[in-house]
Amino acid sequence: MALEESKVLENYFDEIAPNYELMNSLLSLNLDKIWRQRLLNEALKDKPETILDVACGTCDILRLFLSKNNSLKVFGLDLSFGMLNEGKQRDKKLNLIRGNGVKTPLPDNSFDVITIAFGFRNMPNYLDFLVEANRLLKPKGKLIILELTQPQNPILRFGNTIYLKSVLPFVSSFFGRNNEAYDYLARSIQAFPSQESVMELFQKANFSSHNYKLNQMGITTQFIGIK
Image 1: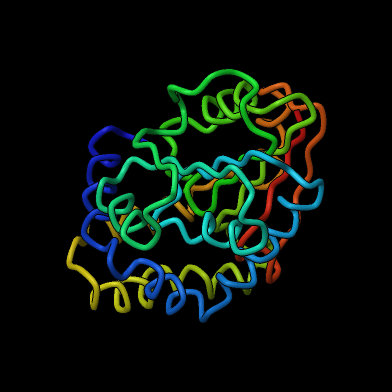
Image 2: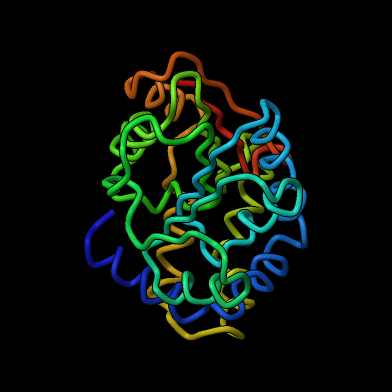
């Protein structure tokens, strides 16, 4: 992702932070709650103690974790001041860090689980993020990525393309007017690599095992890697 696109996106997220969770529900027809619950179930499967949520946004996933187990040590990282500020206002006890996911100030072997929902495709470099996540995970730790992807069925893929080019900017326009950001978001989803290509990146980042699961026939995909 080019630096200028990264700055556009950061400004966009700052702008929409107060309405971010409502906007996600509208754009996904409320399916985002199902997808996040599946991520939550996978993350808590092995009873982790420490969790980092990268590109945490307004911290909806962090709050979900704590609603299930308030003794968890959860941390959120995001590049957007606006998002972090909105998250802090909703729960002042959250441990939040401003930064990007490819180079963090955190020590090696710090977390049992790292999650990232709808932020992987915005990383400056996919492989760099996976390498950094591997560094931060404890041995046998788990990385879970939830990401918007293109359906494998050509008919569904065509419908998804129409949605990205028409419905997405129409609904988003009620919450802001950054057309550059809308264009970037649609292009980033269409340009996102195939599930098999992402699996190859997991292997290059030295994850010992990795797999993926399709949601709604590939509208989103949940990628899982074990250190």
